[in-house]
Length: 78
Image (cartoon, rainbow, N blue to C red; front, side, top):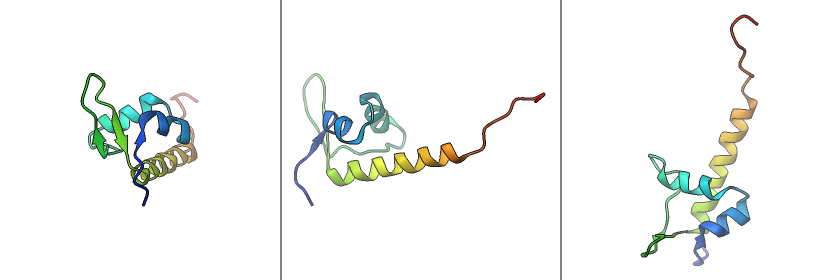
C-alpha cells in the first residue's frame, strides 16, 4: 500500500475525469469516493488514497459501460 495521498488534481490527470466529477463523487449521498483527509483553509482540499481512487474509478467505468450497453430509448409514435 502506498502512503502517498492523491489530490483532486492528481486524480483528474491520472484517471481522465473532470474536477467537477471528483467533487460530485465526494458530495454524492452516499459518497462515491471518500477522502482520506480534508485540509483546513479556504478550499478544504481533499486528499485520497490510491486504493480509494482506483476503487471509485473502477466503479465509474463499470457504471459507464453498463449505461452505454443499454438499448437506446425511443419516443412515443416511432
